Image 1 (cartoon, rainbow over the protein chains, first blue to last red):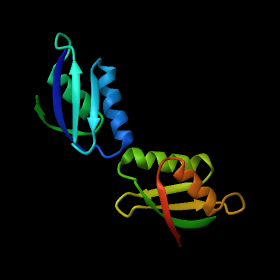
Image 2 (image 1 turned 60 degrees about the horizontal axis):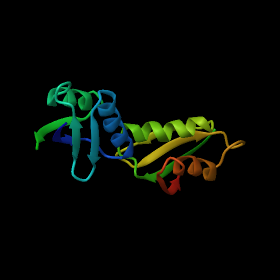
Image 3 (image 1 turned 120 degrees about the horizontal axis):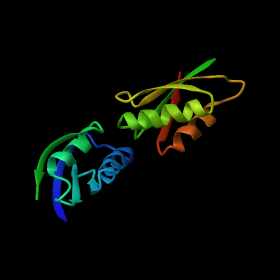
Length: 70
Length: 70
């Protein structure tokens, strides 16, 4: 499993946490939102997913992915 | 129909708007959230509802109702 931390803008409440973590679960990734840190720690199978797909899943929920880090 | 503006803390995003307006609709009231104003303008049938019932519906969604105004 690969790990990535995405910086995400616009997540403000527990509904946002559910939206982002749920969207990641739907594509088979496991995400943990840090509201204060404005970030999402994600574990994913790199044979099936990549950072672009993770980003798309989050942005489809209406949030902006700013950057990716380790 | 009676009108009241409730001051509500904790509403931060469109999910919160849906939660609050939806909860009011469920009890037969019509609410319009102003996120920036941290308030909800509500129309309701005063023969069936009162400010306490409106407040309860909003607080059940996890928000704090601070005050009521005209």
